[in-house]
Length: 553
Image (cartoon, rainbow, N blue to C red):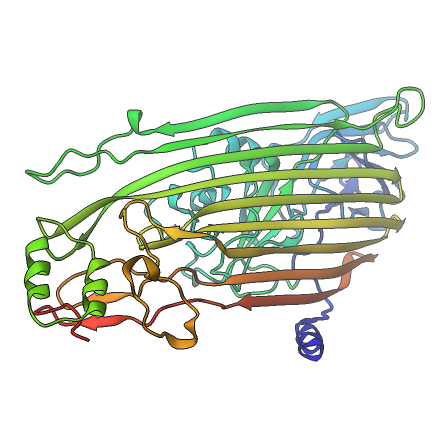
């Protein structure tokens, strides 16, 4: 066993010279000129994050070019000083996920004590990258009405994106938020990558669901890179969706919210002529809160509130959806006729497990309750100008009813998480290195709460019907599946499997400015472990023809 696991880990380990969108690779670049357009070398440029105070100091080279490498997502102020020129202050420079905005700096002749302040253009053209993609901000994620409040729905706002579900409410499915329900530029729906702060968030072995479904209130923004991306993106041939988790800042901010839906304010579904007017019950409540700000001790630690910050969020969903289901079943008269012929005690016991209805149609309420909860924390620490450390931990817990249309149901539990620690070190104005250690994964439990479906009001234990014939390995105590030609009957499969998936990753990104070019090298080492436990206890089915369907022996 140990050897098999070791071999699988060795095969799963990957080392590359570029990164698969694993670390924050944002940067600000541009040129410094005077009023005549002449390039200025040796100007000092300070790039400062307005929310946290994080700053990066660089110098323009002999061609007037400057680069601030590997900076976090946020809004920045760029301050430029040069002897013989007025100080330039450019505010409101937005740096999105994976963005490389070019900001041109024009200095006016004058004293350094004088300053010229301008506000950056709202729309900043990307001239340093050919990537095609779009950014969704936190304001859009929280203020656009989302049916189900799943951030993945927002991908459809972008060109070339289509989804395979009828409603965004259905994106959250059996095994969590479905990352396989969107096609970007016609690529297969299972070809997209999903990352949270550079951590892999897609369960490729569990149907394409995301390990965690981050709340729209907890994300700062996310970016969908659709095509023409560089070698730092990889994993699959499709698009890459990168989510940046919110960070705390110098000021305290928080929000509390609740969103709800209810069948009392729900429209009726299509009703055919003569059909019954039925509105299935619906209860949807999504509530939670977020809070973020500085961590400090007055007079002792972080007194300027520019070093240590936190962001904490909790999100809860309670969903009670339902639909009207039906089975084509024998009538009591047909069952009595079948039992009137030659039969045995086993045949009569099997017949007792069947659903019947005077109309031959058994209608029931297909209930699918689910509970979801999320805990999220992110910490940012500006140790000094050359060293920044941050980390996040996101944990989701999701429970629902498995096999709600079957005789036998169970409680499905899916705890999932992503976590990372990142250290960015600036050697000098031209050299930056970032190291990331991360863990993500989930567990799918399908072995709890196995029992009878209350919608059918029938026992599922063999002993309650006197079924004592031998079974294969005597592994199941449940009634067998009965299939009768011409009828549709509930299944009796009690459970599917348990599955454990874990992804451990270590990453390094080294950036160096060489002349007018940026040289980026790195490595990504990944160890993946997936351990399915397929211990399904299933009774062999009994197949009968419609005439005389009671088992004769």
